[in-house]
Length: 169
Image 1: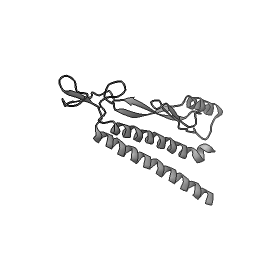
Image 2: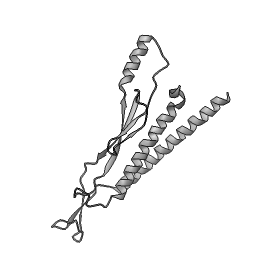
Image 3: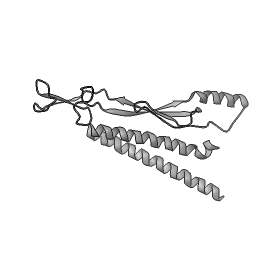
Image 4: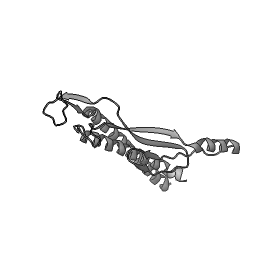
């Protein structure tokens, strides 16, 4: 029953958490777009939020049970996620079904090189390594994450309205 009534809300909540994580990563990238020296002595390296969908192990087992038993109402879907780069775990059912992982990865592109002999982090030739953050692409990522966040909120609102209409019947 929880899958039927609250499954859509759980899936949207997982999407909300994932998009919030993406917005946090974009904000961190923008805040550090001019950071030339981090704790390890290198410029800040842009991070990306990567969304990954994987089928849970129990989906195949559930299908096998359904085919042996000769039926069923269908597969229940659950949404869970993992934020490896932030060291925290998104809460969610872990009973199988579709899982969505959000991981953080560093962008491997080259740092920007700017000639600024007066900069404290300039090398002997006067060149400074700047982070590989492009503010324009970060703003595009922020807008897309914001739109996806709004779509998930709309899905939750629609599910709530459907529940209210079902109660009136």
